[in-house]
Length: 189
Image 1 (spheres, rainbow, N blue to C red):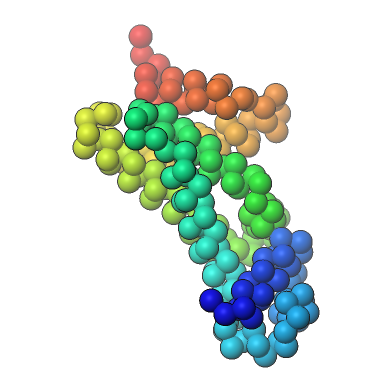
Image 2: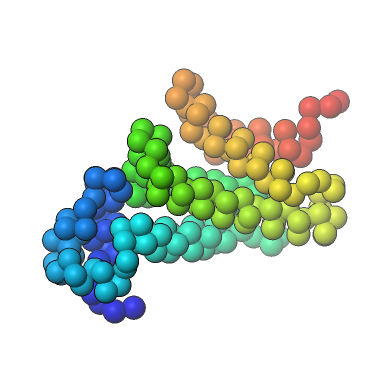
């Protein structure tokens, strides 16, 4: 990747993180990147394309972060928990994602909704793949991998983000226990 392109991507990431996608102009990005506005257009057709590029590399980073914590010697549930937790930690820590989530909620910018959907479907596809592998290995019983991935992800978000809006935050261990209770054991006696 050329230096100029890298400068532009970094400048845009900074601007989107600070001001949000909608409020960021190509003029601002050019100023922060220290390039002429025309230079940006030699690499990116639009602000949307720029956001897309940034989110694409973010997705790669997130997958790598999740893979780092997956251990082949551990059970499917332990690994699923570790990977999901890592995804959400990433979401919490990464300033750009925080700003985009906020903008999606408050303004509902279509371009932002689009990339957030892509981000979520990437995470869901990742979990689904792990579920299919676990079914194949006979580690877990046969289930619909897509629905199971969706439920795991949503439960995780609920426990990590939504619960703590009105309650004491749960520890990583508590989340793992709940995850195991509902997914592994179910509620039946």
